[in-house]
Amino acid sequence: MKQGQPIIHQTSHAKDMNLLEGPLLGKVFLFSLPLMATNLLQVFYNAADMIIAGMSGVDGAIGSIGTTAAMINLILNVFMGFAIGTNVVVARYIGRGDREKVEKAVHTSLVMAAIFGTLTAILGQAICRPALRLLGDQGHILDLATLYTRIYFAGAPFMAVANYQIAIFRAKGDTRTPLFVLTGTGLLNVLMNLFFVLVMKMSVDGVALATVLSNAVSMIILGIVLMRDKGMCKLSLKKLTMDRFSFREIFKNGLPAGIQGGLFSLSNMIIQSAIIGINNTVCPGGSDIIDGNAAGSSLESFAYTATNSVYQAAVTFTSQHYGAGKIKRIGSVMRNCYLVTTIIAVVVSAILIGFRYPLISMYVSGEQAVSTATTRLYVMCSMYFLLAWMEVGSGVLRGLGRSFTSTIITLAGTCVFRILWIWLFVPLFPNLVTIYLSYPISWGMTGAMHLIFSLKICKDELRKQVAKQDTEVYN
Image (cartoon, rainbow, N blue to C red; front, top):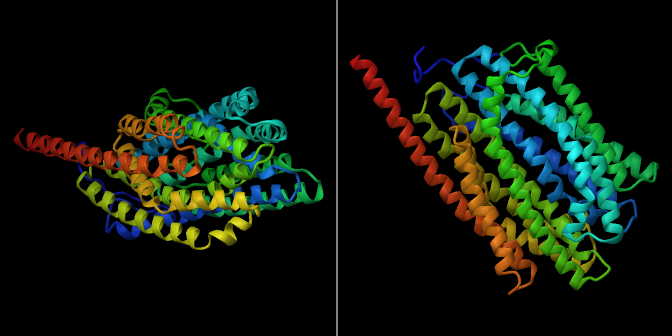
């Protein structure tokens, strides 16, 4: 079959959606909704971690978990970014119908996950306390955050393998299986949280331990399902090996996402440090602003993960169409993904703002903490559609094999901009609104650049395809 020639995509399993044929709007919704439900459940369970940790009665438990997020993500995102590479490469080979390459990519990616997860665990243990101290954590907040982080990183290998397995399911168009599995293990996580905190009288350590155990169960169940798969993505433990070509392709497509995620988290660490600085000035010896920011961030993450589901759809749909040579339909993929993500962003943000007080009260009750959480929700969620557009544009570029382009745009438009904003504007206007405004402004600039480059690359690829077809006809 000549490259660029459309292929008939055969779904290998009833749950595997045919992304290459027929109208796209319904398929983008059907693909995204289970993924969105999966992501929202994960956020719900993470929120339950914070809420149940607060039930322990230990002062600063919620805030200590909140202060770890940026540092944990700094390390995790570097290695977890390669899961995006797995999604792109496996989906592209499925689009081409290349069973052998799909098989090698699947098994190589899981070996990579085990290696990267182990490295993450080691690195996290080594740097967690010094990094948290640099962020401004002090006293009992520092002790609690360090304890939580060390236990959390112990489960990094389980988390890594489970994330790469989920990427494989997404690549083949199956977003329902991860939903079912993570629903069950998430409920298990909540039950273990309650047991460790209320029965065993633990605090952040119990919450972290429950997370580690639930991730281990997720990894096992997802692995069993993949071993029973009847299609190209079937897992065989005997075939787990490191294929050099597959590794290179996954690494090439995943490295930019890893770098981007790491530097993204670095900029968020600088922002977190600025917030801790304001807390230490306004609430010396207390953690009201830290706790309120953690509560607002946790609620905001519901909006982020909802829109991120369409980012994952954009990656998978674009990758399969690009692999199948269906360049013209990528424009339709973009239009439908932008439409779906805008609807989701507006609806979820409206719910969070409309029900802000009862939602915030689940985390914190102090006046300063509630005010901080409310301010964050107002500033961030009112402009969340800009983040949704930024995410879709990034996903399309990655699906087109332009991961480095996406990374460079994102780093310049978000990370560099936010760092400069914190250094230049926050000293002049040292308040939370100034800090939070760095987010929506960077989303808008970066999203516009993603859209411009996506359209240009699609146009160039289509021109190349037409020129090649004309040459073949002439010959």
